[in-house]
Length: 371
View 1 (tube, rainbow, N blue to C red):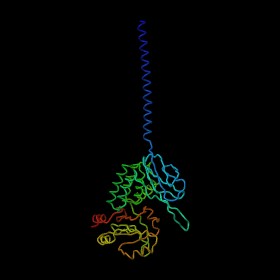
View 2 (view 1 turned 135 degrees about the horizontal axis):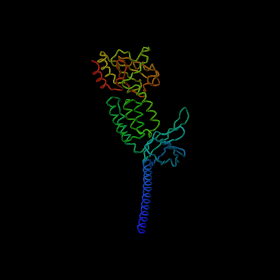
View 3 (view 1 turned 90 degrees about the vertical axis):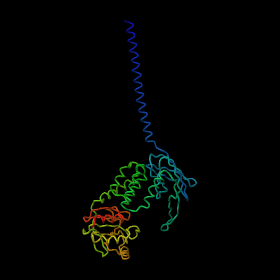
View 4 (view 1 turned 45 degrees about the vertical axis):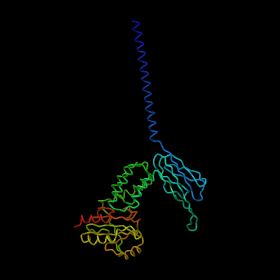
């Protein structure tokens, strides 16, 4: 009996040790998981260094500032050169601050970028007062260069049309998929919204793909401003119909409700690309006018005499109106017209059928709707 008691006591002691060891292993595993989680978080939020070096051609002070995200770094200017090193989490807008009045154009910096810039200083005078102009003459290739090349090679020669809109949407869609937090694409989408080279639905589809917390605040605000205008006057919505001044200096509505289809074009006398090819457009007008097609040109010239003089040189058979408040007038402001050309195709009730179409697309629509 005594031997049995000893054996049971020893077994109980061993069982306690096993539980103790298991408890220690469990605690160790918890600590390990927490530690690994912290390391993962560190890795996810890890920032990467960039290096920017510049040379200044011209007399400059002792310091220069680089502003990016919420950071302002100061560097010494020695022998007309300067350099910055910093850390960023994603591609960001940066600007060189030369003095209280002058900053550089945007410089896009991405993690692990090495960038070289050349700054030029030009001396000038305004009203007899000496001034200095600063601008970036050259910037080295970096991780944003390929992105800019892909966009600009298409957009710099962009002609407004429905078919080109589709191509532009596909290009932006693919670029944002590849770079959803890149400030450069945020800037470009704001430009596209301002130019109205894409319409409301497509702008919305592209915008939701961005990591918006990473975008430059100014671009987001500008985009939202013009997105609201595109929403209010998108396809299917009613076009505004205020009274404007005609060439006889009389007030006249834009739409009179008689034509089945009306093409409203915005232009100015100094805009070379504003109007469609008038020679071809006149041929279209003469073929389809009797079937119910009308054209209305709206000038945003602020000088009525210049507008009249231009019309006398190139007489056209359709209605011509002018808003002498130009781009600051209620009509241009409501529609969000900043850049030209712009055109709207309207039905008899004054609803928008399409926006910014070319001559070929116009003929197809006219053939489909006017018999």
